[in-house]
Length: 334
Image 1: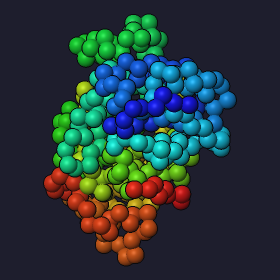
Image 2: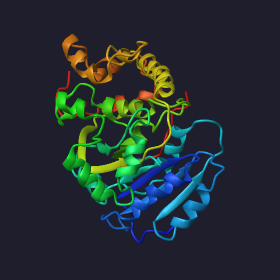
Image 3: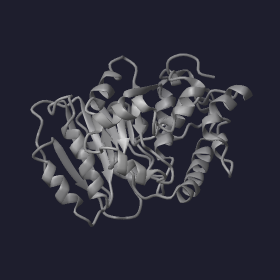
Image 4: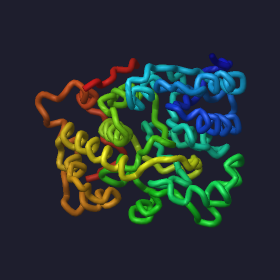
């Protein structure tokens, strides 16, 4: 099922989905409107075992997009595994991760690609309007915003300063120069992000041990950081998060357990900041790291003997990023 690009695409858009065919349709509509050009990107829809009409929706769009559809059996929450299917199949040098229900501005893919133009592997944090924790304001958003025209809606929200990215307070505190921070990976949330395909494969892709909501994107970003990725905020890589039902309290409980897993898996002074329950204020962690002068994660981990196989990429002696901040897919299945 695909409209095969006439040349190798620049980027591969990986869209995991489960039982959200209506939201998937909105995301695919926004991809049709991209100004990057259909020969410059491909769309990889990875279905985590849906029983609704997700497959039919993907077939419907295969004549309008260079789209490939993948299905994995429903064995519970496996979004990490779904994204890994996309990474393994990607033909583009860049993987753009977009959740179903995220509506991209028409210039979003072009902006993602532009931010990967330098020689250093880059992890792009896209900008997401209308994301909320508990679906608050959903009725007002649906009543006042035109979700059929993401470009006009993004322009309106930007001009009015409404329903901005929830990370704005983080950017206010630290500025957009996140690569100067000791832990920029904390804000890499894969509803709208991108990374170099080769680097994603080198560090092992997403950790498939994550079987409940939360943290799998931050943990991947941690390894991208260890491998020298440059983190940038892409405000022009903008998108809208379409309101849908969710429970912040439920997700928060799941997230705490997953962040504790990260803390214990790496067991560094910085990763251990993710362990407390209730958790420390997420956006304050970079300031806390600086206040306590915690050692760089790369330095701590490289002194480990033996170094775990899943951190084998650290043996290559790759740079730790841009400045002092104090092949085939081999997937972790711990």
